Amino acid sequence: MARLYPFRALRYDPARVNMTDVVTQPYDKITPAMQDAYYAASPYNLIRVILGKHLPNDTEAGPNVYTRAAATLNDWRAEGILKEESEPALYGYSQTYKVPGTEEVRERRGFIALGQLYNYADHVVYRHEQTFPKHKSDRLALFQATRAYCEQIYMLYSDPESTVGWKARWHVSQLAPVMTLTVLSLVNEYALKGAIKDNRPGCDATNTPGPNCETFGSPSTHAFGAFSALGNGAAVWLFDMTKWSDGRFNAGSFIGNVFVPLVLAGVTDVGRGAGNFESGGQIVAGSVAGVGLGFLVGMTYALMARPECGYTGNMICW
Image (cartoon, rainbow, N blue to C red; front, top):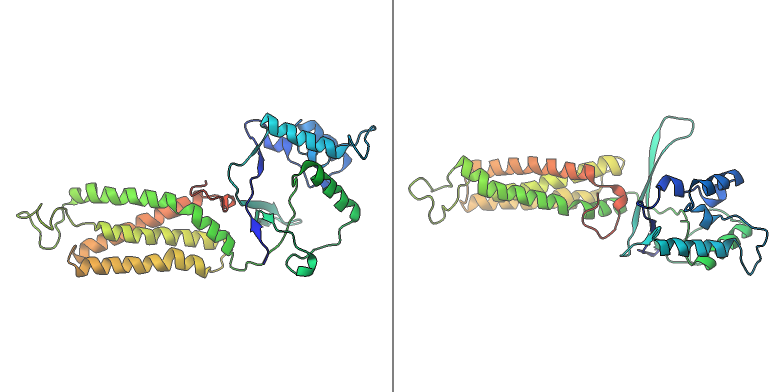
């Protein structure tokens, strides 16, 4: 299995540059005319690093296109044009494109990471084509001068259940809904119950408030909290399956987002009823309200979450 690692990427500061003026096509797709256009677009266009212009006085020892690329990269870092991430991360990556000759729109999804180097004899990483020695020596010289990977290499991996995607989205989609549903549970406990004033079993006007009758019973806050987690998880799972997993059923996502919360919610309701803490109607009211609001909250945050957040380590990423 290939080993991948997070890293601290260099990013353009969007407050200093217009991103459309500084990005380029892959170096081996750039024609001389495109190179001129990129040079004219911005003094900070990446062309100056990945495919700079050769000058008449260039020598193998320097100055040359590689030493200028290294100096340019260092200058941009010193000026704050490029800023290094404070923490290592993996970076989600998504591209939307139209299939040539059709109106069909597709999306290509992946992530950017550091990969461990392997000998082809190890049968871990496989080449997809025979590259020309000239191109390899050119990119190696650029790396040796800049000590930076200025362009990424596309690689494919087998993941039929899209587990990488849903695991990343699970991390970035949980904290905000949990906080929202916690607030709603507190509102139910301290505001809604007082407005409805539905007594718990064995409680009436003569002993409320009193021992075991300190608060009203409907809607059941415990049932609300348990079923709101189920509603939230169901929304996240459905959105993940229909939007990001191309309709494929993902067992891992279903178990974590739906099955486990369903079991816990059922145990909660049975326990509340068996303990005579709330009546059946109060438990049902809390359960229905919880699953409905939980689904709404989960769907809202699932729609807001960006798939390119990836494994950043951040709990909230929009």
